Length: 140
Ligand code: ATP
Ligand code: MG
Image 1 (cartoon, protein in one colour):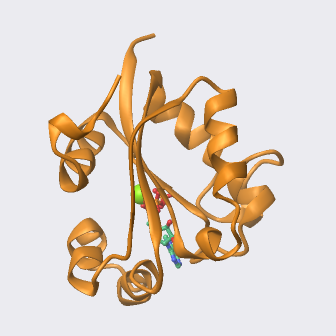
Image 2 (cartoon, protein in one colour; image 1 turned 120 degrees about the horizontal axis):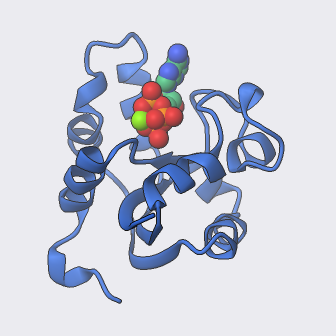
């Protein structure tokens, strides 16, 4: 195992439910530590850029509109195998397919309102962390 960093976003649906404490608790209980955090309201163009990889998908416009519809909490998580571990804690993209006990199964409603984002690979994690944070904004 190696120590990794990954980007996590608590999405507008979870922010509106005031469950950021529950979500962060799940990360911390699994030894993923928050080393950077910022609450922000993404502009449409920031959301477009962040999810550019999905620009050709039919759900892109809705995804961008949802991600810029309210505040989000953007975080960098650090720990052993942080990228895969975060994805495990999050559960499947579609909450209806997510394993019980995962964030999406327990706290999300639908595939397009699924509570959290997590980087899906080492290169994506580096890119997504740099999208939101300067190196000196990461602590620990
Ligand atoms: P995220 O990137 O948000 O962590 P993910 O990696 O599990 O989620 P992706 O395939 O990267 O899933 O899709 C990005 C987001 O686009 C998903 O979180 C979901 O909200 C939305 N999405 C993905 N597939 C669909 C779909 N078939 N219909 C509607 N929305 C979708
Ligand atoms: Mg993804």
